[in-house]
Length: 102
Image (cartoon, rainbow, N blue to C red; front, side, top):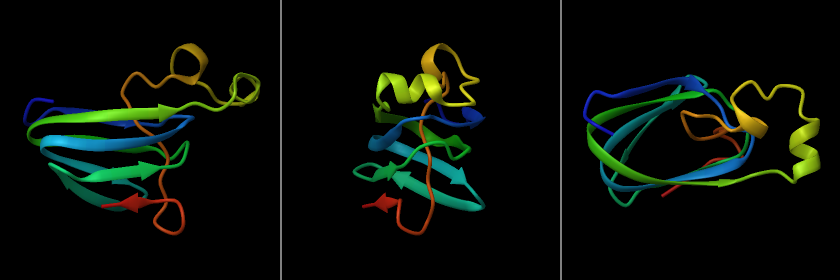
């Protein structure tokens, strides 16, 4: 992402992880903000709305673990593209029990 670029609020239906390769992004969800820099890893569950801002030019690896096909098709809200794919990126997070950051 270029410095200053933003991904507006969105969500994913699959568990995901964001592994920072270089740069600095700000990941915000549910009133919490996480500053992720190179070598940081954020792993999140599914469906929490969040937004991302690049503080510096940044490269990250996004990994998504989709629910089983039938489970994904049965979800009530799939409002982003084909089979729940969020064109903007990542996933669900809560501070207690489902968020892992290193």
